[in-house]
Length: 259
Ligand code: NAD
Image (cartoon, rainbow, N blue to C red; front, side, top):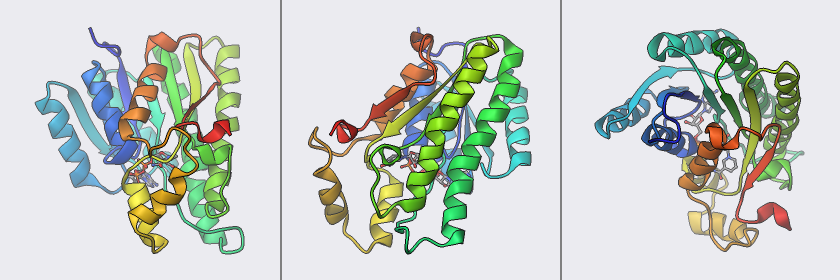
């Protein structure tokens, strides 16, 4: 028996990195998975093909999380394809390495649009469709340890991830108060090796060793995380094993925020 048997999940920004791994783990545990992707259509199709080859059930749809009308289309397509939605992981994100003096209105707005507005829209519209099915549902919002222990280089990123923390708690209180069977929680990854960090290192003109070398000193566990570390935390929050957990903060950061 899979830990997500009978459930339908949607994951944003899922053609690579943490979203991709989350989709693979969810499918292995019995969920039908709608992979959503901004631009990486080919990569998303590959993830779908591989999940199906392994006996899972998956499809993909394009969704720019900043666009309200695309949320309706993606959620309705998920319900047409798989009959309902039980799990949403608001995972899509970007990281722009600019401090408060370097940040521009454009770089600020882009990060806020993708990671604060995108999570707002996903949470709002997932609730709309989830409350109709009357089943146990779970929304998982991916923040970052940067929401708790900031770094100067990720100014707008820290702000967007901070917004995720409190919008999640407010939505959890609302759903609880309404007695919807919808839980809303936040996951805070530490540094995890994904394409996001590869790009960030390149943008900062650093080798991966230099980039992670500095980050490593802030992870008491002594290594940089792997996508599976986050995927399994997401799995727990997605499953009915966590039914009494809502509005919670789950740090998956090798001790980064314990200091
Ligand atoms: P990634 O770059 O590997 O994947 C992120 C995905 O989001 C990409 O496919 C990208 O195309 C997509 N995306 C960007 N803008 C989008 C938009 N407007 N609409 C739809 N999709 C969009 O990154 P990742 O490392 O897998 O990160 C996943 C999440 O985890 C992000 O929210 C990130 O901020 C968070 N996070 C990552 C780390 C880390 O070290 N990797 C640490 C803390 C938090």
